[in-house]
Amino acid sequence: MTKKTNLFANLKSDFSSGLVVFLVALPLCLGIALASGAPLFSGIISGVVGGIVVGFLSKSHISVSGPAAGLTAIVLVAITDLGAFDVFLTAVFIAGLIQLALGFLKAGGISNFFPTNVIEGMLAGIGVIIFLKQIPKALGSDVSVGSGLKIFSDVVASFGDVKMGVVIVTAISLAIILIWNKIPTLNSIKLLPAALIAVTVGILINEFLFKGTSYEITSKYLVSLPVPTTLEEFKAIIVLPNFTAITNPAVWIVAITIAVVASIETLLCIEASDRMDVQKRYTDTNVELKAQGIGNIISALLGGLPMTSVVVRTTANANAGAKSKMSAVIHGVLLLISVLTIPVLLNKIPFATLAAVLLLIGYKLAKPAVFKHFWNQGKYQFVPFIATFGAVVFLDLLKGVALGMVISILFVLKGNIKRAYNFRKEEYKDGDVIHIDLAQEVSFLNKAAIKSTLAAIPENSNVIINATDTVYIAHDVLDLIKEFKKINAKDKNLSVKLVGFKKEYNLENTGEEEKHIFVEHKN
Image (cartoon, rainbow, N blue to C red):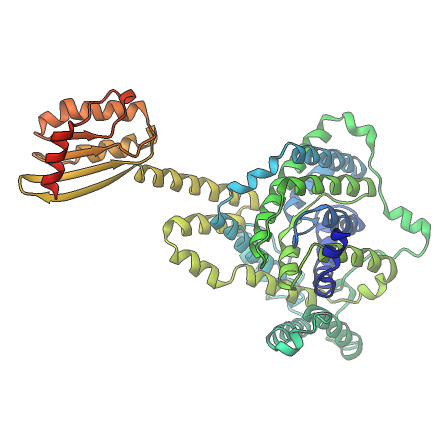
C-alpha cells in the first residue's frame, strides 16, 4: 500500500513530464534503430520495455531507459558480423543475464568513483553533440552529421541545404517553448507542457497553412512509424531471438561487449541523474544493474534493441519536473499506446519541432555557465572537465570518460604527493628553522617530492621533521630521512631534529629537553 501511494503521489506532475519524455523518446527510438541497421519497431520495443519494466523495477526517481545512441556503433557492427538480427537478439539476451549477475555481485558501486567534474564534462559533451546533430533537422537539410572533427564540417554543410518550411516550424517551436517556460502562468499548467503545444502547433501549421505550398514539409521530414493494419502484419514486425546461435563464440563476445558498455553508460547516467534530482535522492546502482538486465532480457525476447539509462530522456524528464519513477513508466505506456492506436497521427509530427525540443536540452547541458563554474574552481577541476568534454565530442563517450578519469587520478596522485607533508620556514636568529610536518600517510609516491625538498634546504639551517600525526611511512621514505640525517645534514652543516617517530620506524627522536630548547628558540 505504501509503494502504491508513493508511486501515485505526484501523478499530475509525473504525467506531464512523462508526456514530454514520450515526445522526445519517440523519434530517438526510431532514429537509433535506423542508425543501428535494425528494424525500426525494435527501437520502439526497447523504449516501451525501458519505460515500463525498467522504470518500475529501478530505484532511480528520474532516470529514463531506452535504446542508447552510445550503443549504435556496436549494434550496427554486431548485426553485420553476426549476419542476422535474430542472432543478434540472442546476444542481447545473454548481455541481460550478465548485467543481472553484475547486479547481484554488487558491481554497481563502481559509479562512486566517477568524479563530479568528469560527469559534468560528459554531460556537457553530450549536450554539444545533441545540439549539433539536431541542426540539420532544424533546417530541413539532408546532410547527415557524423562524429569527431567531421561533426563541425557537416553542420556547416547543412546550412547549404535549407528548407524554409522546416526552418519556420523550428523557429516557431523554439519561440513557443521559450515563451511558455518564461511565463509563470503558462508554465504552471503541467498537463499542457511546452513541448506538447509546440508539437500540436507544428502539425497544424504544416497541415493547414503549408499544405499544397512550397513550404509544405513532406513525409521525409516527418516521424515515420510502421502502420500495421492486420494482426499478421503486426506479428511480422516482431522478431524473436534465434537461440540455436547460443553456442556461437561470436555471439558471446558481442554479449559481453554490450553488457560492459551498457552497464558503464547506465552507471554514468545514474550518477548524472542523481545530480539533476532537485531532491538529491540517491539511486541503488546494484538494483539498477538488475533492472537493466531484466529489461534487456525482455527486450530481446520481444525483438527490441539493447538499452541503457539515457541522458537525453533523463534530462528531459528532470527539466519537465518529474517527481518519481512513475514518469518513466508513463512515458513507456504512452509509447505503447501511441504506436498501437495512433501511428498515422504520430507520423504527422515534423522532425523540426522535435529538433527544437532537443536543441534546448542540448543547450542546457552545455550552457556557458557550466564551463565558467569549473574554470572558477581552478585547474584541478577544470582540466579533467574540459578534457572529458572534448574527448566525448571528438571521440566517444567511453573514451571521454576514461580520459577524464586518468587525468583526475593523476591530479589526485599529484595532490597526495603535495599533501604528504607541510613545509614551513621561519626566521631564526642563528639561521632558518625549517619545519617539515609529515601527513598521516606517507607513501613511496611522496619520496621524490620529499627528496627534492630536503635537497633544497640551505646550509647552516635548523630542521624539524615532525612525524607526530603519521600512521604509516613507507620504508623508502624512512631510508631517505635516515640518509639525510646521517650524511646530507653533516655535509651542509644542518641541525636535524626528529619528532614523533614511532619505535618501529627505527629513527631516534630528539630528547625532550633538547626539543624544548629548540622549540623555545622558535617562539
